[in-house]
Length: 589
Ligand code: 6R9
Image 1 (cartoon, rainbow, N blue to C red):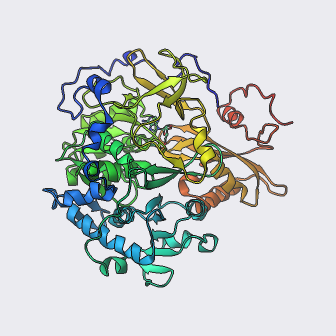
Image 2 (cartoon, helix red, strand yellow; image 1 turned 180 degrees about the horizontal axis):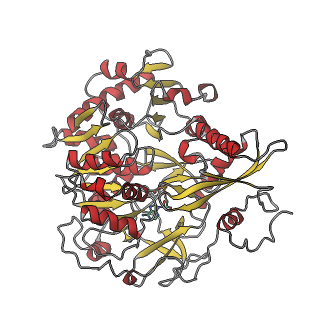
Image 3 (cartoon, rainbow, N blue to C red; image 1 turned 30 degrees about the vertical axis):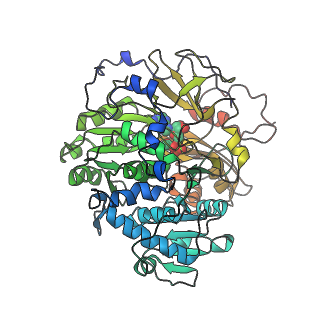
């Protein structure tokens, strides 16, 4: 889709306009001390030397993230601090992770899982989720993490497309896995459930208890699969971004320079491993560096979040704008009840961080969250504000050293400062996705402007080289930081008996960034009512996922479409905002 390239930046005020935000030079003990120098001299080959595989030629991320620390002075260092504030409060050292992931790996082998097979995880955020993912790596299989919030349709789409051979889940979540529609799925490993070897269901505990403490990793190459993350585009069902083992090079270095992680840090990445942030920076980045990570279970709760920082003396905090805004709406008094003084650095990801939320976090912690821009497909952070660098408030940042992101027009020509265009990346950064699972045509779409990876975002650059994110050029929705494809929601909506047609857009929202809004034409015989709206929203909640359910529904006579039958979401957005619909010459009669 083309964007009105070359026009003036429409949204963000220049940084200098913000009187409250004084830009000061930083003098800081950051890992990345001199951005300019690094940007001109840095070479990824130097980072490869940090990994054992650069000497041995034997590649497996579990060796670099767990085993080599368990064989070092970090053996008894806590890798994972975990609490759910109710039943569980646990710690796992690198040595513990080595043993548990070894046992789990043996268990998978006994089930017949082999190198290259896909194994899904469909679990709440618990230590078992992390052990399972690393155990899957140990045998060279490919994890496919699913959000706990997914309902049957979402689970079916992802397990079906990846042809997962096994799924690690719980007795409760298992109910949402339609086994009869998933011929490739041979095994369910149940955490906290019964079952035995030789049947379709086997208990996780049994696998762990009956297995030896050491399982040598399957030795892979840097091009072998690391993980598949499903994510949404503007058309079609969600697609699986396949990453390769080499991605660890990117995770490691960005965790070092953008997150600024140090050996003595307590790092809290608040993301679930169902989202790329929860693996790239909840697993691979911190653990290849040998850093202690904090994970909490349960739902979002402002008190618990502050309590987490206080309880674990969290030093580095990586979260998303919606969470920062939700903390903001819980008020300052709540924040002041907790000791947040352990923090030394904060980063943000997933959507643009608005200046109000940034300033508020700065007010309660003394630290301004630093932006990190990237995508499921990019695997690692690519545009960031760095701890040692001053930055204008509201800017997305500058390209990570050794990578190049910029703004181009429809032909791929770089645009001068201040002009809006496509945000693109020069291909070849370490954790670029390797393919879209079983869908080479989709993969090619990202490269339709020759020489560039097209993000789908629009942005401009300023005279100092800062990139300013401006929005999406397609219909992808970001709600509370989660990427939702309108097609997936529309498909769920039209499965409801009352719905004839549905069109879905992201509507701007102060807290969630965007909310999902649906325009629905009803079938004959159905009358619009508030109750029907609720029923339809509930239907999406129980079939797809709660976060994918429309928070607003408008009933319309007809959903606007082009003559070729494509939903005109541009018209829906105009309707929603009460704006003129513009050119409708391509609209069907
Ligand atoms: C990691 C992740 C990717 C899309 C991306 C963009 C938006 C992410 C952002 C940001 C503004 C930031 N996005 N980080 N927008 N500022 N710092 O978010 O992956 O879920 O695939 O989403 O999210 O629109 O294109 P994913």
